[in-house]
Length: 286
Image 1 (cartoon, helix red, strand yellow):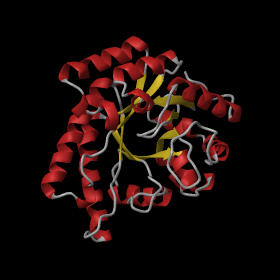
Image 2: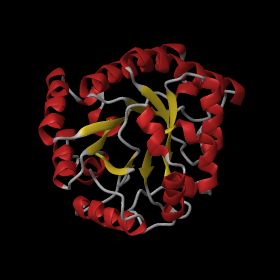
Image 3: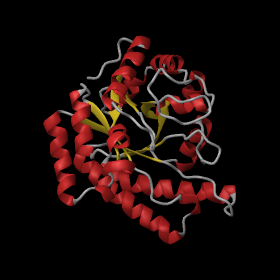
């Protein structure tokens, strides 16, 4: 396992472009990065020239873009058929970007329950949409990942729901991103990871207040990071990832929530690295 970094922190702190964020990621010693397509690296944020420049920037800095966070632009279960087609077109554009940047994972969200849409219908709409995204991604060698969001208004709000969605979507290029801070908010333990062992292809470190999603410095909140990290280590996921032609599991820091005031984002990263390495000294950035 190794450490990675999601670029959104610098956008939250100072509205930094993805190019500026990548400079900071590399300067801090990372060699693996998650691109935040919702905040500053989505197709809507980048001109055609900037999309080409992003690959050159990654190569120049010696960074591997492991994961691309990009959501649909509407809430899928409540979207109209026309809106879902717009969303599919946007994600298709994102898949083209991801492929050109060498990214083999795209993380999105199944959406939220909506008043006026029955729960069975909402789930079916999400499954149908995710299947279509997987089918668009498959020829490009890209896997779609679902991250549980630990609040009751999300369809996939815990690992059990992620397992059900994994089963219902039923595509070989559909997997799970395990966010350890989200697991803390959902009151999950390391044992809850085990049924998803073969599907976990990426992970995030985040930390939060006990009942609020805050994305604060790792070790400063209520997430049981040490126990969950030890659980991932026991699962020996690196061997499974190597069968999929990855070197090892990457766990990216997800720090900062929109609206935060962050005077020194680099310090947030350094403190988070120190907290994680105090729990598992073998975790490195390269």
